[in-house]
Amino acid sequence: MDIKDIQHLIKFVAKSGAQEVKLEMEDIKITIKTGPDQSYVENSGMVQQLHTAPSPVQIQAAPVAAAPEAEAPAVSKEEDHFITIKSPIIGTFYRKAAPDKPNFVEVGKTISEGDVLCVIEAMKLFNEIESELSGTIVKILVDDASPVEFDQPLFVINPS
Image 1 (tube, rainbow, N blue to C red):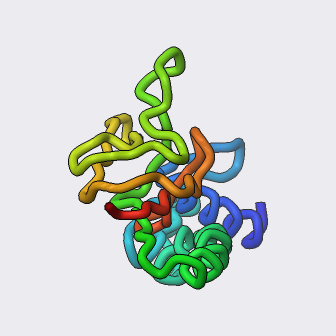
Image 2 (tube, rainbow, N blue to C red):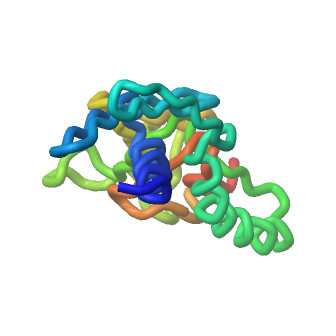
């Protein structure tokens, strides 16, 4: 296993959201611990501190977040009063409470303050995301069962 393989492994672990991963093979033992600002790699008893970007996940998130933001100016040029609801946490976005249940909201549905818009699973906890305003759903920007980042746009709402 060379340094490039280890770097790819570090990026994969950081992207997955895991805090610590241990990998043992015949001749090598690797422990990767991720934190908000750095990653540690323990290789055969020797510890090396590898400085990474503030968070590899943020680097990967830029292209994902850029696509909805690229669409947002087109929407805002047409209707400046639309409001974008963003993800308050990192996790997996779900449009419904269970596979056999209906979606919480659909495009064109009128919502009230406190209505559940979606569920975001983070660390095996399902967090209901509630609307902070009343209005009509104009656009749903994320596919069901997709990973989302903090502050990633989820919905475009026409407030009433």
